[in-house]
Image (cartoon, rainbow, N blue to C red; front, side, top):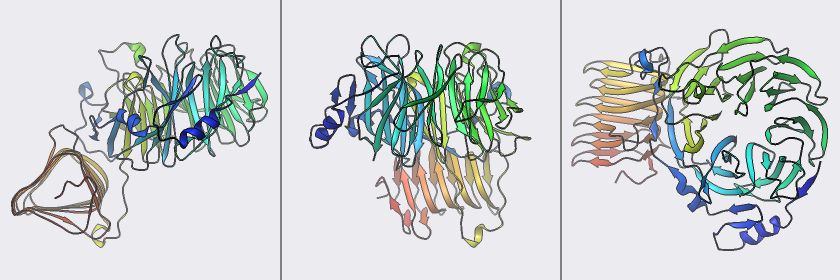
Length: 537
């Protein structure tokens, strides 16, 4: 094995940081671009807003008629990068704090990859802070740990004489959304490095056919390795390594000796297909292609549960309905099911898994990563879709104490002289308020909201409304009032008719409106708030 350094890149990056020019900096096969404004032009608001879920149990998979308790907002869609007339496709995402790292490769025989660094400090307005294009390398996967980015890659050895094998581990230091060191390559056996995971003391890397699972220390010096055919993925958790082979299933290994603890036989998978593993609470989640996802115990590999792909569209080839990736965080399991979309389940009780439904997103889903309130979905040539989980916010308001959650139709009507109050999280479709309505927690309304004459609606917590440029409207009518306390994001249009009142309660309120705002004569906006887009004038 051989390790090589792209000497001089650190000097070029240092020179670039002192240069006012925003032109990309090229060092041989790597082109680093720090023009955040230009890069972020790929970030679009198309289809942004509250996202509905498809009910897998309803005829023809129609949109849910019942309200759900998982508010999801599509924040941005990000076009895939292009280079030299070729469009790349997203392969993997890792998230750490205020930054997300996204890898790309190119389909077919072309070696061409990239890494984007996203600044997600403002989740409603993510930006790409820096990018590296690899003109002779595909990037299969990546992981961030302790200031360093680790890349699993395939290098064109006909163009790069400094590597001894196509499969490579690449490392680079990052800080503040920027690459801050040389890119270091370490070759390993195999045609492509497919995945990697950092253990307590090593980096575990897998490579494909005729490849290995190998351990590398902090200086990328190779250690123990083991030959396992057709490795697709690796994950570390519960003090064990799990690797996924397309031919021999899952192998649970000791993370130091690589001795086998257990084997989970699976059916032979499609050659070269992307698959991932996830470990959470001592359980292993496996993307199993046409068979959906499997959940197993990390201790001995015993089966806990199988989850089938919930929707199988009739107009799609069977080979395109496969679980490509799984991701688990905070008891939420996301499955990327190719042309069958992204399905979401609550796995807090594995004996009674609750299915929320399937995200109503465009494009085939090749990869998904959820962490805390963030969800990144890779749709191949369609680029990325970035979502936010609008989690319930606690309230100290005495009026919120003891309220039950809402469970009913997604179309809610509160008639005049009627009072309804709820807490928790809820997603509704159309809402008409003629009486009094209080919601404490996280409320999302997808299409239309009307606060009618003499109606009073109060939202205490997090409120998301509408869809961007989709004719969704929030209307406060004459002699009615909408009270808001907390954070509010309106993707549709806001209209205050004459005599209407929009009132902000307490301190620290924020409102973001992306649609048009109409404030008729005699309407009032009162209270303390921060208008992030400057629309409430």
